[in-house]
Length: 150
Image 1 (cartoon, one colour):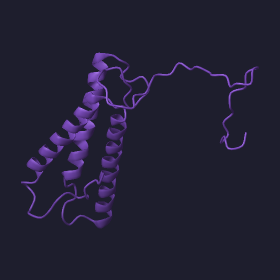
Image 2 (cartoon, helix red, strand yellow):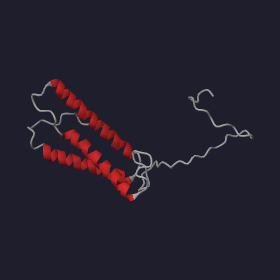
Image 3 (cartoon, rainbow, N blue to C red):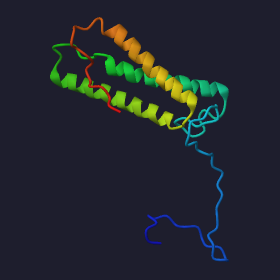
Image 4 (cartoon, one colour):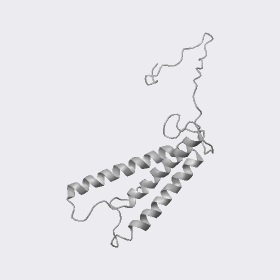
């Protein structure tokens, strides 16, 4: 059929109406909900098991924490070769953006627990990195990278 983009529609039934094919699919939430029965980042993970759900929450927390840590930390020493400095900046940027996208995808599970641990991970990462690393830097020097704009 034209306009279907290569998809074939289900065959019509004998009475002229379309047949409905039922697949065994999990309902995806489109609003925030509470509970461990969710998919976070991967199909069937954590799979409704309490221990795996806690592990998934820890994983999201650590990713959010590292996004902030990478955003606030200086990795380039003064006097470093410009090419090496550019490669380091690129690597840190790729890691930071990749982790930020993974946190965002985890948040798309619409699970309240995932939302809370992502916020806590960002908050603690920002607090630790600004308190621990800013004292050792000279004034008016920030991180190697510009802040992520949402």
